[in-house]
Amino acid sequence: MTGWGTATVAGVRRPVPQAVELRLDVHDRVQHLPGQHYVVRLTAEDGYTAQRSYSVASAPGDPLVELFVERLDDGEVSTFLADVVEPGDILEVRGPIGGWFVWDGADPALLVGGGTGVVPLVAMLRTARELGRTDLLRIAASTRTLAGLPYADELLAAGALVVATREAHGIRPPGRLTAADLVPLWEPGQTAYVCGSSGFAESASRLLVDLGFPAADVRVERFGPS
Ligand SMILES: Cc1cc2nc3c(=O)[nH]c(=O)nc-3n(C[C@H](O)[C@H](O)[C@H](O)COP(=O)(O)OP(=O)(O)OC[C@H]3O[C@@H](n4cnc5c(N)ncnc54)[C@H](O)[C@@H]3O)c2cc1C
Image 1 (tube, protein in one colour):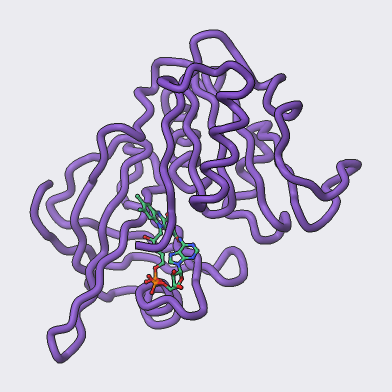
Image 2 (tube, rainbow, N blue to C red):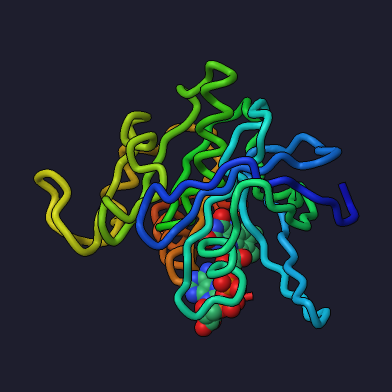
């Protein structure tokens, strides 16, 4: 899909504080690949528009497109999506978009997400489940607190390594993701998919390259300010 289209909001959930999960029935939908995103455009009564990108969390086989939006207190678009949008609303959307940060469902992958950056990685995990190929994925997620991590239960059930920077997680004291965390997740032939804030993406991809991961095999998606 190259132009703008519309989607009906089919479901709204708030599974973690300060965030919203939107389930969208995208009209004339083109099936996405795991890792791709949509752009959502809001238009005010005076014609002012604002648009932002949101990764798809759902697998291609899901009849609805699921987005997970972190609410930024001073955010223009995320506050509207989190506070105002209700089931039955129509949103203007464009997508799916992205050809690089995409997992093919066939090759081994190391998924490294920080905070909301796990969203496209969850789409990859769900796709792997659809294909019966979860053996291809190794996952590491970093979060401030476990309660604030999107899809925490699903990630933990898939065997993801979860590190929390502001609280102990099990017997693990608070702390950032380290090279030692990533070493056991390495498998031959992996492509790494790193997603999160600009700072997280930079430090996590540097950890991988410093470990000897070929830079050409590290794909990065940054959720920074637009
Ligand atoms: C490819 C792509 C995929 C994305 N997927 C997701 C997703 O799945 N879920 C999601 O919640 N967001 C995602 N984002 C980020 C999203 O596009 C917006 O940037 C975010 O929702 C903030 O928009 P806003 O209008 O609410 O804030 P703005 O009004 O744009 O900014 C408000 C304030 O927050 C700062 N800011 C803006 N964006 C961020 C950010 N991401 N983190 C921290 N501070 C920020 C700004 O500098 C400003 O100070 C993605 C971005 C990209 C490029």
